[in-house]
Image 1 (cartoon, rainbow, N blue to C red):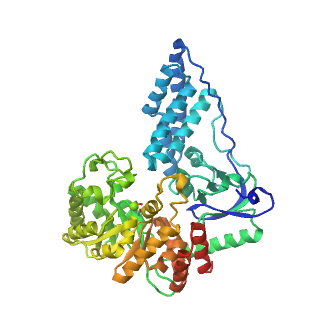
Image 2: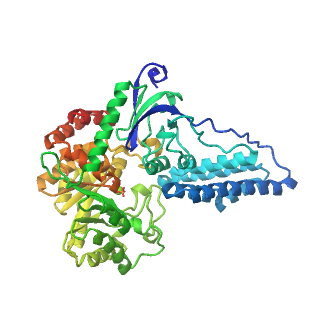
Image 3: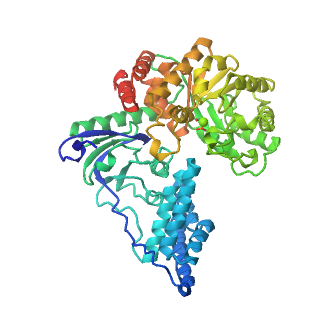
Length: 561
Ligand code: PEP
Ligand code: MG
């Protein structure tokens, strides 16, 4: 890391992945070193093993109870995370693995560590969401070790003044217990935008940047300025820099609060602003935003807990709920994106070494009737609607897949489209668009597959940043194909939730942006504050860059920000 960060006078700017927007300036605080409980490996005599096992089980139960109690006192995502951690401390697989080790003479602490290493390796191999849970598991183990040793519970110290918390990664149980009056913002050197740190920061409304290169070199007590939307940390900022960033953020927040739609640039170029939903309740809640319709209904998320394929009637009822929330507006349903980090038991996934590159999305629903049954159910749900019902397939990689999907969808009176989330689909966007009426770009997977980097890996968050110029160039190419053929090209990945990137996407020629309900007004207001010509200038500028930080800076400059 550059010396300038450690020297105590010089300002420096670090970049990470934006996780929660907001601007805060404060001194930093760091979690104290975790209490290092000495773990002995001295073999336990056979006669003492039963009591050693009992001590281990008691410690694990105490930790589970404590975390469970905190879960009961918390709410929302924090409660879910704490409850999941409590369940980990009581997990029979983990407890039995440790018991096995104690049975052959390992002391309780060493046995807990061995069991934890075993499952951490397993989760890491499984990748995706499971790999993100390794931090939770290690945190639970640390708590059990402290309990066994009679040491204080590890965790984040309560700062004595309002501060910004910096850490390599935060244990979910620590993040869930943060006091937003004392912790004003968060930054981590690891962690992806879907890590627990980011999820809970979002719930607490704490500006947050993750995967910040060089963060670990900022000493505790250093004044910093954190801009969660830009993913930027200014070390030892000048008073003017703080005042400017705070004022800019206030303007953007006020603008967002005042934006009522419909989506358009300041000079009237229309861009539909849509919302991503996962069920009827989410769609009904989104009606309170100015979103003009639903740009992505992730249908697979309705059925993650099902053992058997839901019947056509059950499916139709679920889809009707979402369609009814937007009776007069466009709704885009995505057919089941089963596989990888979203396995559906009834899709009967085969064992695969690389599930993200395996039978996922459209690849697993075509030969077993799942796709046709789902399309029948969607057609039933849409039968009384007058507004358009659009249906798109995930993970399409060839024109042939698009062609056969389109035939099935048209046969049911629905409007066919496909997602562009595989580089092959972006490269052949024109050939694909010949067969379908629209495409929607899934930048989350497009980044994963373009950069060959697991979108869930906290270590690879910089590579899966949607601002990666290689990803942006595939998005631009797809938008151009849409313009040539006169067909709509939307974006429904996380990129569409970033107000600055939304302007760039508009400059590429994207015709709709679909984002989480919480991002709708920020995106709409950013577009309304710029002209199409400026968006085009920003789009051209980012295509001349070679890394995400430069791309962001080029876009800001072109937009006069
Ligand atoms: C995407 O990949 O960008 C997308 C919208 O789909 P999902 O995040 O559900 O994979
Ligand atoms: Mg996807």
